[in-house]
Length: 207
Image (cartoon, rainbow, N blue to C red; front, side, top):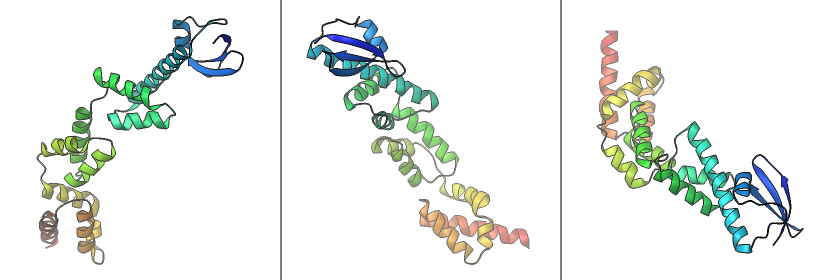
């Protein structure tokens, strides 16, 4: 095949016309590094390799742009690249490279996110679900959470004070609060114990 024309297209892309009829978008730097110009002869295999390299370069640039804004798990970043229109193979290579240089690390992500969740009084069960939704593998998420010493009753008391205190005085308030806390993943026993203690403390304050 012969490159019959090269035109600037979108940001950092060139549009190549091959044999006067086939159009291909390639990264400008890839074009420059491979000395592509009008009249250049390339084979089908060479073109395929150029397209893959261009897709990889662009996907890596987008991935780093995402990571500059927030940390991601491998799975979340891979899926985000796919949604942005990149093909699976270059995306997989990008993830492998970023993992290799330490820009993505599921363990680091899981530990940091789990710590924020625990500090926000999120139950261990709910925290596990949130980690999974972020793309943390199940075994890793479970292992990370097992390393945290979580006092359910303390978490529940904090939530009662910050979020549910006024709701306790409403009609059927204690029952509704009890149900809400159980839905948040706290054990029945821990909720019952913490709620009873908290209500007793409130009653003593009003005596």
